[in-house]
Image (cartoon, rainbow, N blue to C red; front, top):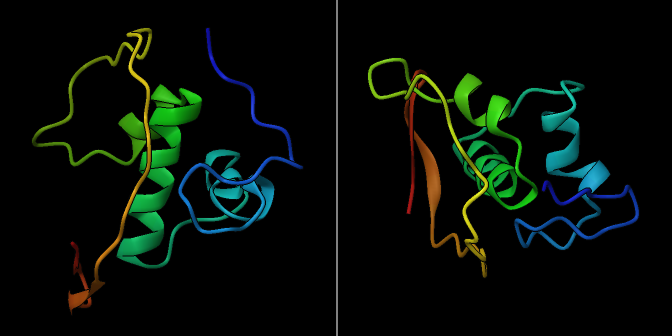
Amino acid sequence: MARESKPSDMCPCGSGKLYSDCCGRFHDGKAVPETPEQLMRSRYSAFVVKKPMYLLDTWHPSTRPSELNLDDPVKWLSLKIKSSGFNSPDEGLVH
């Protein structure tokens, strides 16, 4: 069963922002991640709140599975970003 995030919940990505002001806006299609870090945080949060369609939509086609089952009893603990940035206008890195 999917964990429902409320607008008043803190975002699971660890940004310190409300879910609705952080990754929730990407999951709801109200915004598109503009940086590699935003994309990484939004994808991590999508695993936590069980948004398989968002994950599939943001997965590179060359490695994307045809479906994604998030019903496993995995407990996501935290995301730690050490650094992030752009290598070029079309490529970014997150460590």
